[in-house]
Amino acid sequence: MPFHFLHAGATDVGLQRTHNEDAILLEPERGVFVICDGMGGHASGAVASQLAVTTIGDSLGAGDVEVGPDAPEPLVLAILAANQAVYSRSQSDPQCHGMGTTVVGLRFADDRVHVCHIGDSRIYLLRGGELLQITRDHSLINLYADHPDLVGKLGPAHSNIIVRAVGLHEFVEVDHKVITVEDGDLYLLCSDGLIDMTEDWMVREMLTAGETVDETVATLIRAANSNGGADNVSVILVRAESQSAPAGQ
Image 1 (cartoon, helix red, strand yellow):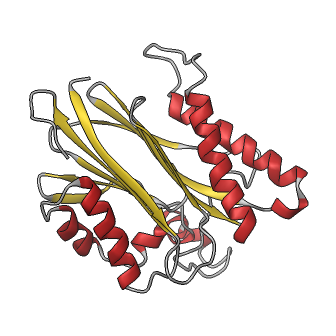
Image 2 (cartoon, one colour; image 1 turned 60 degrees about the vertical axis):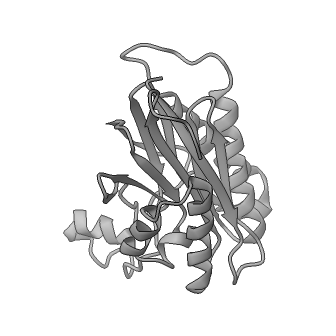
């Protein structure tokens, strides 16, 4: 790879929940980073998110990834496998009926990064001092914005209502885009436990404070909890540095 990647990640139960329904996957040797935020109630939400990250990791580690310009993106296939696993479990286990999970993931390959997501967990990119949200929430609010003829027909558009998730249906569409990586890029993956407790300008301030990626992850989680900690909060940071740049945390 023309870049090496400094990374850190953590998940925290927050201040108001007794269970952590988030799960994270850190596989720097494959350039893969994933956050899942489970839903469906205490036990089943945790089952969904953990089953999803385990399936994604196993799928990517199977060793039979097809390569070539027309080959499907491995992370997309892994997320689709996770959808099948979570859906099947929800159908076979009455205690897990209706469970699901969001997913956001990155897979770095040479000078490109594959950005994949389902749901309302997010990925941001800090580049040149500007913080950009590079995923778009699969929320009822955005669905109504895209299809004004549907406004009100699916209920009030509260910010926490999502219209797409892993495991809710037998088939699901994965949003996938490819971005060219630049030296100094800082990628933030997060669950809505961070988003709902902070503003984008606050996140940008913390990302540009000059701390290491490990320190910044801890700072972001601490900020979410300081502002109420109403949900589980999960954060992964990945900084791209050119191979010629000195490595360091």
